[in-house]
Length: 475
Image (cartoon, rainbow, N blue to C red):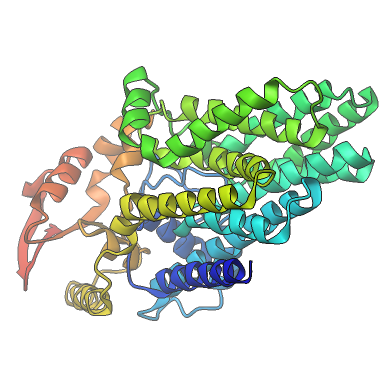
């Protein structure tokens, strides 16, 4: 077993080191929307724009998530010099390290569930945590709410399992707080109450406790909402609730189901097999049954959510986390040589998943020189054309849009594919406020789409050339 301990600690060290290297690297846009989020954080940090602006007015950006995962990043980023060339890079480092921190909190909670709730030995629990950490997608490595969201889901589950043992009001309060924080990290957290209530009803908790949980949750929701509404007004709801309306379809569900089935297929088959065995048992333990309920719920929810256009396989990650705990629990009861074989299979599976889903994003070209070159070119353009604080700029390159955060229109075309806004007033009344259109050779298709979207008339602009750039300036 000493060899397996060495393998476990080495694997954990390697994954953490790898994640740190990603955090400090100049690899941008690990997954779609990251630069959109960095842009919003940079503006909130410098008090130029708030995190939530009106999506129907310039600079027409949608921040589509509830905000709690971004506040620690904003708070730390206030320590940086916003005029520095490395300001955006420093925000990126901070955000990605924060996602790593919450990912480590996640596996700590998983370790506690395995050890304290299920009595699994330390080494096996550690391996489970390592394998779960290794299965995180770029959505959990980049500046998005995913890693923090998963952490709060598992915290809520851990607290629910504790409550089943203690039945104390303190635990009930902690569950309601954790549940509320889950929602205000990502809107999908709202659904977490369903399995919690199912478990409470199944084990017939006191009606007074059930009512108290409901009241505490409503109170927590109301307090945080009032604070956000005070800061952002109706823009908070406009961005997070009414702004994005993804259309669902069976074709989208089938596409994700078959195209990316290798990500969850191993866990799905293992979970179904073990479930069939477990359901035949006459005596069912309270803790493991509750984990089954959470796991089954998140499997069903994943299939519902992947039917949304624009969705991806990250919706399966909570199922993978919870099914890994169940799989480990049952394999741990088998002979040690069978368990080791399972670990080897799962380790190979991890490597395959990394190769298919993570390596294309995180192993892209990492070049500090490209970052510096784009920043320096942008600086020269800004100085040459005297781009001022309130001049709006339509720029093709997504990294340069982020660098020019106080001027750029940070439109994310994927978000706007699913928005209910039609921008008819915007196009007729405000397009004249776009003073510069900047793109490089080879970016014509991107800029043509944006010009069409904004209904811009290029006859109103004067054409300029600067090095490799084409620049239209409003006459």
